[in-house]
Length: 467
Image 1: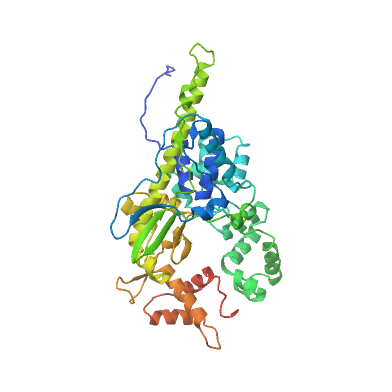
Image 2 (image 1 turned 45 degrees about the vertical axis):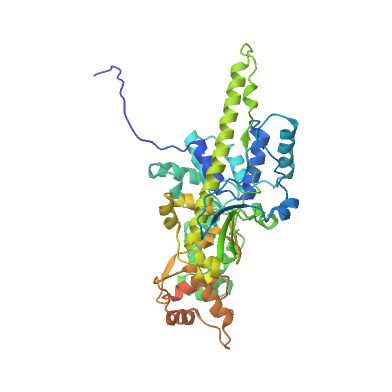
């Protein structure tokens, strides 16, 4: 038997998520308000960061600044991007200190967010670096309801699928129960599993949640029990239990009703020409304090190496944040310009003129990944002549139609038509989903009854039975 020691080399490719990449993803997905709060926290922690000119951010000044912004392009002449700020020389003086203090005092504050609450719990767990990083990434991908913004599979390479699933189970075990799922249905089921329902009850509950919620809401327990071939009393008991669960488990952290919406983009019709404005007025420019690096002290100082290391790390962290913010702004600019071009008719005529457009369409033209587009538009708004709307509403899948020259019509435009048909109907008998489908078919829009039913629910419109 050979007992000798051998040394072998192997070459392999491995994709890892660096802290800088995670920060870039997080900053890209932040709204103006969230970015304000992050900048405030970073300035408090990192002395290398400085605000060179006065950027006193406060709600009191929001009305005065609402008309300010950077005109980044005009659809008719395709002018080049311009700079929003003039960079000033920086020195460590009382004025610079006052500017930082003004921003810190004026920036919007908020209670603990869902992400902060989850990360605090995660920090108390003993996890290896990779598992912690993936869990952190999952948490940063959750929206205000505690559901995934982007598909879980898009957060890490396929080779990390097993580790990503482990991280998902860890995040789902955190408080509040029912988070890190696709939607409220999966959340209700997860809460029931956590509370210990047996497999038989879970199977019945899953059927009720996925297929029969509307009938249960109307009290049709007997009808539902016949459909699923279960005891009526058990169906009623499970429905009563279901009402004790929270379909939106992170709602206690949702402070949107007290937040102000600050659009990232503005599109206005100025004398027949569409003008795109990037609103950067609420985000201060950040620079590195030039004098901070000179505070290393004497080389003979026994703490010289520690001081030098701290200064280098602080400057590195500051540069990473500045780079992430610049990338965020540049990506939003590019997306805004393409949206202006692709949805030109929408900005002129309104929702009915919205063209089919997907994240993939823009990602291909910008040479970016679809998830990058998704992160860039999530929780962000655009100010148009038709109101302030989420940027993501400018994206819509396509349905076939003979009423359009392109042979396609957007899902949003069809939903507008469904709402218009229902609200403008004057007959004694409300229109059924099938009747609405027939009306749209006559207009050249091919749409099934179940699709009408889906769009009607998304519009929060009751069925013909309830109307």
